[in-house]
Length: 397
Image (cartoon, helix red, strand yellow):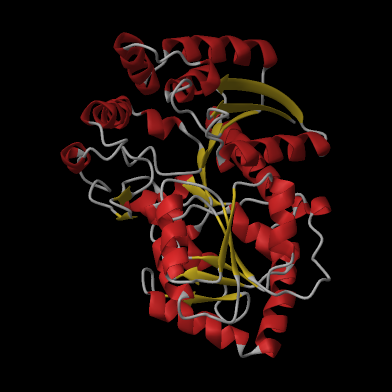
């Protein structure tokens, strides 16, 4: 089998989990003998030094003639069985769908976020979930300047969605991969055909994940220190969890505020800042539990898979995909988003129930081995490819 993989990398100064997922899947396919052709763009190469250049980038994000031409030529030359896209924004654009469709090659696209249905891409406003534009027009996004708090930037993204709706671009994709059933349901609500969506979670290469044998003595949070991540709720809760230290891994706009709050309230919290992944995994592996207090619709956080692989129980917000991925009482517990008291009660309850913690630790590792290994993921991905290839043959035949 020959697969053409397409991906637009984020800037190296603002790395994304999407980039990591793309790299993992590319290596997974190569390790299983699949021939790979890559079509990649890098946002480090973008020149946005002037208004005119930023306007051009915005227009190209809606429809890039350059990407259409380059992909058409690459498909003609390499003759892939399937083209699989991850991120198209902003340089590749949905013109890539048309290039594949016009060349007669089936298209698969992994939906890492909500960009085709939300100008802000995340279904979030003011740090909270927002679905005002889902299944309707996009005027609310313009009213609230949902992307980077800019009317111009939001307008460009709204135009991208609107232009490609009119052109039928989104219907040129053979199969969309959603990371969870919850994410798929948002796309169905927005008007995407249910049969065009299939659910396949992310995965982790297992070789680098070894559960710690050191007795756990702290909780851990890993992520960006920003409003939608629920970190304010986390620290308020920790005022009521005096017996367990909390290690906070990550950086972001709220760090100074959070450090000040922790100091003023004499909280048992240590801010470790951003860490390279290998170092972060060492900290996670020795944790008694991991907290994910998000107050928005997470996609499929890689930190969940890391916790599962390392046998670390989770306490998460009961919201969006988190509610689906965490098994209540089996691999973790859930609390009401934004409710610090509920979070503290869940954590203290777990600390008082060592047998349950041990059960969750074993269950987490079992869930990882059964669902999120490279082997399991390749079978799912190969099945999706075979399905779209067979469907294309039926249409031609």
